[in-house]
Structures are given as structure tokens and as C-alpha cells.
Image (tube, rainbow, N blue to C red; front, side):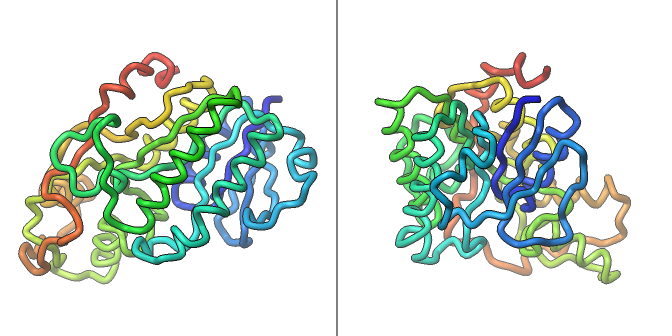
Length: 283
């Protein structure tokens, strides 16, 4: 049975990725840092405790020399402006990934972020100038450059998945989806939000996870690629669609919060590049 290594396996995206992969003929080596209730028990999944900042010399051998890695782990989130991302996390991430590439890894997926585009507006293509405006995004951009440079003397497939906005069960409590769910559970009559005219690109985390898994299992070598819907939607229309779909009685209280000064009003991803792999992704 072929094996796939997954970091961040108990995180929001990781749980969905390994659940999808477990239904296929793959052995999943799921790395985790702290044991929690989110372990998915399945015959194809082996959980291995690991601190990526401190791995042993023979760690790759001990794991059975997996050829594919889905790397979702990143510390100190959602504190995007922390200096930790540039001052220490960047080096930890690079050293960890280089270790596996030095030892024979053949296919690598790393989760990037749409925040790498910074204040760019409109439909965002992978080849536009990047202008990250928080420490987390700046560290991601630097890591992408460093890993890309390794391709000059190492033969491996690289997918740098720039993830846009997601929603789904198990998401961070500060996310839009989790906040409205909490309001509904508390039987609140109104959901406080901004005017909601911002255009964003949202996708169900289940669909995101399928795309990630299929890019890796098909050995795609795409470099940076947007993982998104390519369909801009206003925040108020998005929230209203959730209310209608779930038949919630809660109403939107528009204009309660100001718009964020750190994000563009119109911000969505181009799926022109992703669409090139449509046949592979629908297998």
C-alpha cells in the first residue's frame, strides 16, 4: 500500500484530508504534536507524535520512507501579525521540509495562503506581484522562494497551494462560519457583522481537501496554484445563503462592525491554472 505523510493532521484542513484519503488505497502517516479528541480512527491511518522543530536523524527511515508529503502544519495561528512567523517559524518550516527532500521525498504539497497577495484587488492570478502585509504571509512567501530554489538541484514535484477562504465544521472559533454557528446555538436573534459588501472567495473545506489530496496523489508539479472557487461572493450574500440552507431563524445585523483595514474590498482567486488539472481532480 502506498503511503502519504500528512502534517497538521488534527487541524481543520488536515482532518478532512486524511478522512478523504482513508477512503482510498493509501496508508496515511498522520503527524501530530498534541494528542486530542480529533483523531480519526481508521485501519489505514497511523498517528505519529512529532514536533517538527526537533526531528531525529533517522526519522524518515522510521516512517518507512514515504514519497509524498502534505504539509499543513504551521504554529502560532491565527495570530497573523506575530514576529514569530518570520523570526523562528520560517526556519523551522524550511529545515523540516529540506530534511525530507534531502532524503528522497518525491512529491510535496505545502499550504500557502491568499494573504500572500496582500492588498492586491480583484481576480488574483498566481503570477502577479506578491505584496504580503502581515508576518505570516511574508514568512510563507519567503518559504515558497526557498523551497522553489531547491528544485534547481533536486528532482521533486511541488504544489504550493494558496488557500483562500474556507468554511466547515471544526473551524477556528474566530472564523465567520464558527461565529454564526455559535450565535445560532445561543438562540441569538441577530448576527452582528459589517455591511457585508466585501467580495470574497469561499469554498467548503471538504472540497478544498479533495483538491489537495488529488493534486498529491496524481503527482502534480504546479508550483504556486490557487485553491479556491474562482467565484466572488459578497459576505452578506454568503451569510444569507448559510441562513437559508440551514433554515436558521437568525437575521443579519449589517453595519455593526467596520470593514477591516487590512484586506481589500474585492478579493478572489483565478482558477485558470487549477482548471488545467480538472480531469485529474475529478478522478
